[in-house]
Length: 248
Ligand SMILES: Nc1ncnc2c1ncn2[C@@H]1O[C@H](COP(=O)(O)OP(=O)(O)OP(=O)(O)O)[C@@H](O)[C@H]1O
Ligand SMILES: [Mg+2]
Image (cartoon, rainbow, N blue to C red; front, side):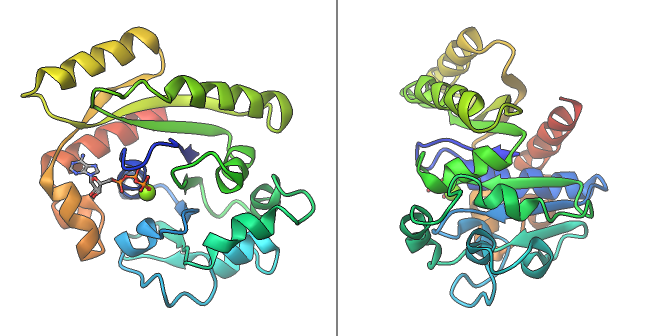
């Protein structure tokens, strides 16, 4: 499952880490792939982005298979394929490689079934890295921030998914849209949820991820919310989302 939105700061990484951790907590085997050169998923799970020997870069270049790069994390059942800054150049290098849209897909073909679920955190663009995620994935989850311009760009993203389906990956499915940073005290938050519900009635998840300061603190402690503050609103919401995702 690829976590995608070309808009920055909408909660892709927060969702990737905490959804993956919630699924692992439910007994699933999950591998989380950090496909963003910013490495926020890597650092958010307590790994140093400057010190990873093998990263997702080696998967894309074909120098390593997933079993060589997936690291166990502090969460039982959750592995991480880390990113680092070298991935920033990968987008340009990738463009020169054969089968450039299928590098991640080929690397994941080596997956021997040890991981039940693969979750891919994408960078905020629809470039070659994200395209590799969309080609490798069966499912897409789109986090949308509860703010005034939420719907802007969403149509563009849905159109991109359609193109990928037609040309690169017929199996790709939009599993759902999750509303993030929901603040029930503001009317704009309710309005935006209503607007997205009207436009995407079957795609939108019932779970609304609340704006919760604990969610923004957890990455600096290198821990998912389910471990950092297991009973806070953010942790409860991500467990609910995990149930909905698994049900779909
Ligand atoms: N529900 C939430 N409540 C409070 N803060 C949040 C919540 N979700 C995300 N944040 C904070 O908002 C910022 C952006 O979130 P995040 O990094 O998950 O977005 P992103 O889409 O991955 O960003 P980028 O596009 O840069 O990769 C972070 O500082 C994060 O801690
Ligand atoms: Mg991110």
